[in-house]
Image 1 (cartoon, rainbow, N blue to C red):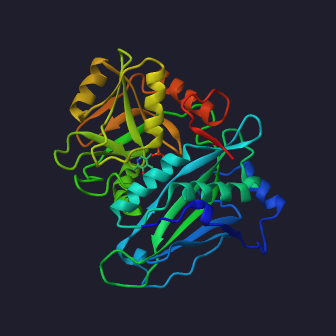
Image 2: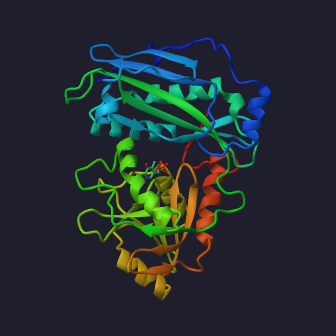
Image 3: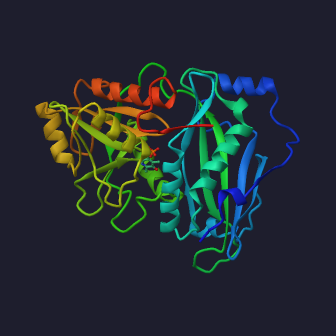
Length: 365
Ligand SMILES: *Cc1c(COP(=O)(O)O)cnc(C)c1O
């Protein structure tokens, strides 16, 4: 258990022998895509039993040396986070709810038997990296700097128990706008596979959950769909979430439903933010189980008019069509819904400093 306070952990900046030249960087920033280009630096903080967190550095980004017996390579002790920094309308830089990511990171750490990182160190590490790489903000409209904090077990030991050494690392990747003019509605495939079982790791943001989702996702793609939908593991009846996004259902009476956080669903920060924004609009939002059968019936009767998925990377993605082995149904007109677009615009405006921030979500650097 780490007890060290952020002010006692100072970050040492290591000199960079060869940062990207301005021309190469400009080419990336004009067309960043997602997840394939990286900034010049990374943050690394070490943890070992007895010492806690120590040796925080802002280092040139590059390969990390791992013993082939490192526990992460064998037993998958790994957790991660994803958040974005935005260039604000006034030219400053801001993070969106980084304390929420820090807090969720520690919940994930607990579930994977890893040491917790004090929230102020998590936030400070992210800020330090953004400051070091502030020349890496995309120049395309709607761009942002995607930050990926993660922790791995580095101890060389093949026995099965929590490791005694870890590295916390933060890397950054310039990200373009997922969809330039309004997200198109996606088609989703209802998988026979399950993502998370009661008592499992579904609520933790760990790489292992993603490894297990790759085959179902590939199956969805092979059948011509954009995303995979997971139902609950016990009854294979209740809607849980997409591969890496939470879901909302919008009804004709203006109310919304999202599946409750019962331990098998990842508690998305976008999910939480949209809930607050919808309630700000005076809309009723219920955290309530919703079945695939009910969904189909409501879509066909017109009771359900919109559905969208949400997460940091794509923000809000409308769902247009749902398919499984036996059935296929369309939501609303099959295109992006009105409330979906409105909530997305509200959230993006706050993230970019173009609208007031009534909930205190934006942290300026
Ligand atoms: C990260 C993630 C989400 C979305 O969380 P945000 O905090 O909104 O980005 C949803 N589902 C899964 C499985 C995730 O890993």
